Image (cartoon, rainbow over all chains, first blue to last red; front, top):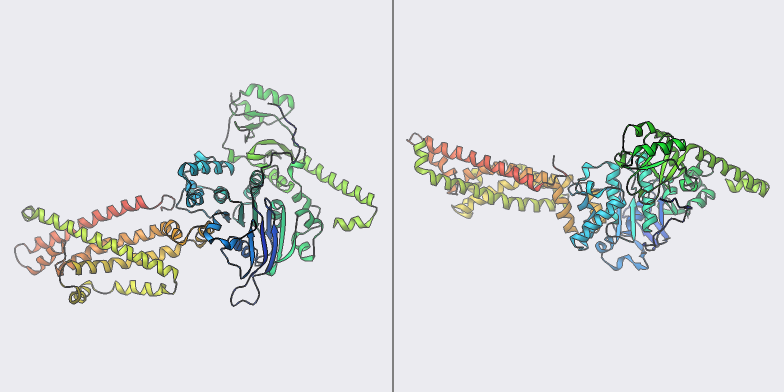
Length: 406
Length: 213
């Protein structure tokens, strides 16, 4: 197999399958309450982008989200999906075109994984063969082996797996828009970071319009192509790309909220794919260990990355463990912690702390192996960025640059 | 005793079947009525205390008294027995169904709506299956209870094994008095045990593996 040079951004990206969402002067007022929950929100969400709604609790972000699929009806104002007023059809048929994923996956406990995923396709009247194919395709997309998980019940899955099925269910009927309400709130940090990576990887392929409500600014920075920061009453504090929001917060509220200015925030802005990945010795499951060990020794590696037949990393044994067996062994893929190429340096450092290797494996689309990133390359990158910033400041000659940096 | 049974074997078996049949039909109707009522209670929460009170007070009405109250309306015969058994059978199912529906996680309901399920689908595909283990437990209790109520209902010439008990009572001191009473009582116990096993089986088949205890 020949190694092809891949530069960031050249990965094959799918065509946009999302649709534009436009909110026009949307107001939600509850009877008996003085302040409106949502005070005239106007906003355009471009097709194929992830927009993260963030803000303190009670700012109206979830209310705004639920108005998009009419779980909450606005008091006034119009919401357009692909130019069409969402009230032009019944709420149920609208909702079948909009995926909905909520915290913990919210799977129906009495249905198997496959039945859960099939809920919307079944309502749309797909035939059973098409549904079965689609279910397998989606489970594969979210990183669950269909043969192993299809017939399980939600209670037989871990929190992270349930959340994955929740995402698969949201995508089941290939809706142009996906709404996510605190999707990764109920899982531990490592799993959350993995799920975020997977969502980014899935989005690279599908290019849906995704609206994601979160209270975690780091999650918003990581996932969002754009971030909508809301103040009480769903007043827009700022609506822009993560870079702009961090570099130029619109007001004190935003600055406080994102904690901008800290150079460590760079860690949550820089993606792993912008680092040079190390290429240690790799081997495929079932290969004879003799040549593998020789290759590793020649390269001076003390461990080997084991890939399966689809080039997904499955294990990362030390050389001495490899020597024990005649053939390269595999372990269940779930046990190996890996990072998507879109993971942030922050995630990379987190993962390294818990890894035995003080390095971490980076994967691309559908979990394909790309390389490893180690602690030195992260710190090196940070130092270089700082040096470049200092250089720029010198070039610009003085205090103006200091302001822009803040 | 064995002679007594031997002479009347066919008739006893027929009456046992009649007894089971009465209970089955009454519980079936009771389940439908109770679940329908519980759906209403679930939608209009103000009804909740009313439903609870009815099912609590209802069970304190002596079944004999209800039979007596029904007599002028429905006359002697199977109809009165059926109404009486069905009335009592409804109560435990209603109580369990109300609790069962209330226990269903509201986020699941919202999630179902958010996916575009109609209200009818939400009820049939989410609410009912999730509440079913609790409702089923109520039905099971109801079947057991109805076995005894059906015996009392035999007083108005309803079908079943209860007739033997009343014959035994009216002939107290006579040759076959004890035999009659025993055949009635033991017969009902046997029918009840078989019915309970069948209910257990029904639970196995109808309760999703994903939520079975």
